[in-house]
Amino acid sequence: MRRPVSWIIISKQLSNQLGQTDTAIGCRASWTLNCLKVGNIIERRDCRCPRTIRRYSKRKMELPEGILIGFGNPLLDITSIVEDTMLLEKYDLKPNAAIIAEEKHLPLFEELTNQENVHYSAGGACQNSMRVFQWIVGTPFRALFFGAVGRDKFGDTIAKRALFDGVQTHYQVKDEASTGTCAVIISGQNRSLVANLGAAALFSEDWLDIEENKCLFERAQYFYATGFIVAVNSPSVLRIAKLSSETNRCFVLNFSAVFVLQTHKQEIDAILPYTNMIIGNKQEAIAFADTHEWDTTDIFEIGRKLQSLPNENNRPRIVMITDAVCPVLCFQENDKVLEYPVPKVDKKIIVDTNGCGDAFVGGFLSQLVQHMPLDYCIRTGIFASQQVLRIVGIQIDKLPKFRESCI
Image (cartoon, rainbow, N blue to C red):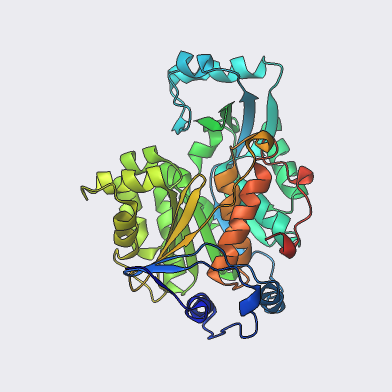
């Protein structure tokens, strides 16, 4: 039998993220809540209280430069919106997947550049997240980004774009390869990504040994890495994850794509014990379960198992699983699960779904580094993703100025 859960209990659970016991007394009339407890699962329908938001805002801290460091593959996104699936079929691509380019895919990049409706933007999943993070935070250079580019005009273009958006880049520049590119094919509400990594695939661990970079690692409090960079250089990611764990800092890992989990199982497994937050979508979570022979596609069971995997530090692990327009699931210690609904968006305003996941992460991290409650972090991530889908690519200059009242 389903029974209502007290709004005070919900508030306490969220406040525990800050180590506090706020009960938002006096705000009950302002909340629109429909919370149900089924066993140990808590479903949240809504959680918006202006007075609570104002109180949390006062807790926000002045962020130091370089508080967050991201590791990923910097790429130049080449985006094309297609009317049918002919291009996908021609290159044997699925409507909603991300892959590394093979030999048969290389002509695709030239074909896209010859189309009339093509759009170029600085990309790469992690770099996109850092740019969205900066859009919300506002103050430049709170986020730093590490990756590899070629010594060419594309590398210069990406660096300038990131700098313009407030991200401080620390690229390892490679002479032997060109800057990576990513073909983004939009068909309806689906997007297919084909990455030609180029120089990004040559990122090496010795870049972490540069004295200047070591100083940056000492200063940072949060580290974020994508599965894509794990596929390129897992020792670098493992090293950062261990550093974070040993110094009681926060390391966040995004699964990023199904192929990463299928082809880099051992590398992912080595990193997870030092990971405080795991982010992935439903397909990626199921792929992880499949590679570990868990014999289940139940997303709740998978999320709980992920959360309870061995943990080498004192920070409780959080697992977040997204599923397009379905609620964001958040798995926490003590077998606790929270659901965060995703507001409906009119299909008429959806232009490009590519980058929505990256934007979600950027929005989430922008509040996490300020020690905001988990629900606030997630709702900011959802808000950011729903702003990005209204434009082609992640063009920060075309996004509205972020206001807390928006979430």
